[in-house]
Length: 86
Image 1 (cartoon, one colour):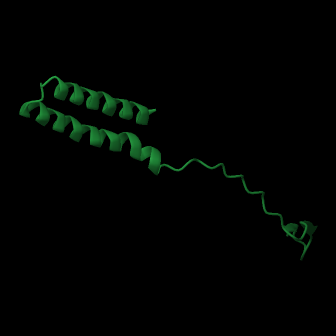
Image 2: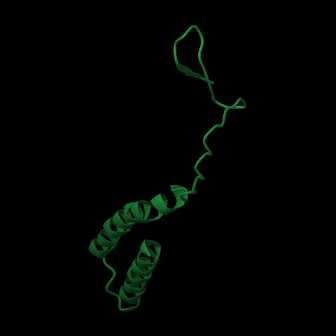
Image 3: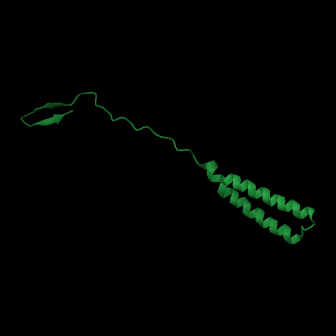
């Protein structure tokens, strides 16, 4: 969405530039103003376009299954103490 707005802003600026040239209204002051506008739009484009290009899509990671012991858990009574050994 931001890239479309950025593109349309450049198109409007370019159209205004062409209209001023055709109407003989392009003076040195308006060229400087268009230079400042172009300078600002380049940085606006970095803000609008680069995050989209640099971001990675989120990948869903499946949860791992709990690890199961190879030996079953059994109750044993060693030395008269009740414990649960694996």
